[in-house]
Image 1 (tube, helix red, strand yellow):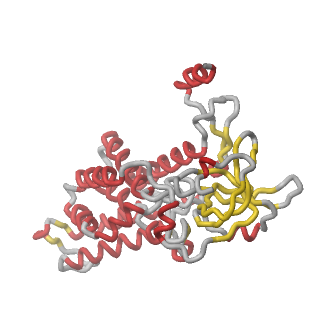
Image 2 (cartoon, one colour):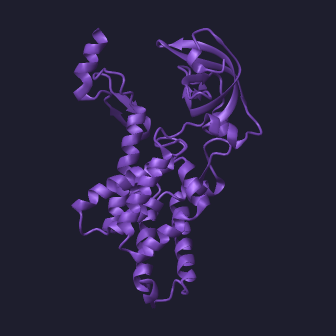
Image 3 (cartoon, helix red, strand yellow):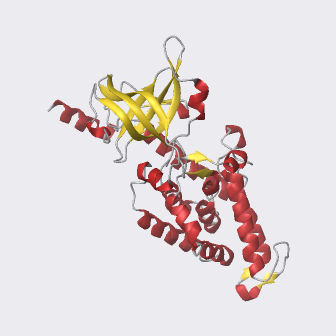
Length: 352
């Protein structure tokens, strides 16, 4: 059975290659651990599943979005077909091509998002000679642009699919471009450029060569520190290439770049990267609290997109039962499913 869409109750599953995500531990009424997961086939179909009598340590070791050879059967739970796995054998010697075949991908057009993103950021940094120069230097880095267009934004929660990093960044820049008209005191170039680079550290933080997982440096440092380090390295190299080292305070009138302004801009963008997860007390990984108006706006726009996306993903909007809110574990809250403006329409169509 290579297509989960055709899998029905009681049908055997014999050595089928599947990608497992949303791997988590649950417990029986007697307290025995077992594993729950979402199985995905190469056609993009998904189905919930479980494996009984699974050791807690073994569950914790499994990487999300890894490929497994699954043997078991289909069963019915609450009116929905799911997989009960008897054997889960991790696929060894996985190639990137195999992983890419199974990984979910952004539903949006990658080229259109990229073109729109570049247009927005260019329009907002055009009056800043230093950031305009930095943007163009980054855009001619073929490897960076390719990775940026393909990388996921996370292994779970929000934009956890190929192209997710681009989609998330495009969403933030699109929103910021509209919001900035309300805040004329804020530097549009710093905000848009900071949003453009705020998650570049995820390219080193995560890998999808064998499934979506965190790299060793990603676990030890995190993408905020990695991204801030990469940004400063790029800025130092650019300024050096212009014939000056970063600590120098001279004006570079021939390039239209004031060195003091450039140095202050490097610090401002770096601060936005280091603080874009909000206040440090929330334990989301910010190195410092947002301490500039630009950093405050960057962190709130980032949080808005991540949280709204995460809730929409977790809440089944096709279920029209307003009396039964859905608990979303990651956000420790209940969320109601239906859109009020469509509730009457859905109830009417359901009775036909």
